[in-house]
Image 1 (cartoon, one colour):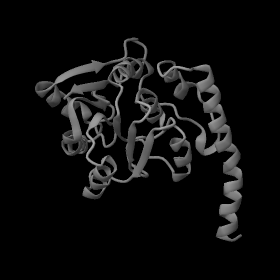
Image 2 (cartoon, rainbow, N blue to C red):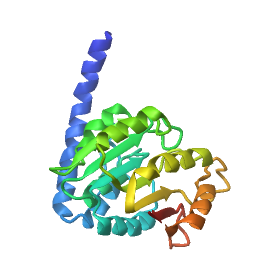
Image 3 (cartoon, helix red, strand yellow):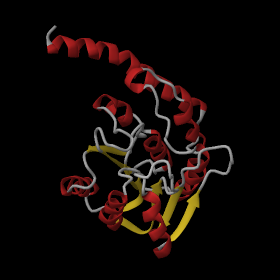
Image 4 (cartoon, helix red, strand yellow):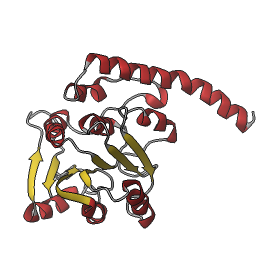
Length: 239
């Protein structure tokens, strides 16, 4: 079987799943009409194939309380490092202004979260509201090339909200913060995921860097309140 025919057959199978995904999102948005209510959509959405899920990897309690802060900010420019299933990217599109620029940076086949396959790009692009600009940069956030691509996309605009959820090693999360925090405007917000130590996963070292940030900045922590639920932790830094 030729590679061309394989690709053609694959596209035929993928198309119904994509159409089902976008129709389901529209249906859910018709039920949840406000940005605040649409926080529920990534958790309720259930698709098929490459579009099976957009559920965030965050604790629902933690991300719900954090989302209210982003809603108050109403960012005009959002940068997310680490997109994975796309749930948080969907949320930021809802929280941002109708004319906002939202940029996702994600490493294909990245170690933390696994990245996302190119087949999901049309689904993520559908998250943008009319008038918003959504750019998907698929590359390593630690390289100069990716940083330059972001600076080009920003065109001199300052970032209101930077979400760091990519490389979870100490050196990796620190590199992302050092490289991208300078693009955030005074009064903006930087957030980090996985700020709590997890002894069973010693390679996750965001907590080490977070403890340093707490000594230097005004911070807020969002930690799961239910004793029987998994606590991961979201940390907010005020610039």
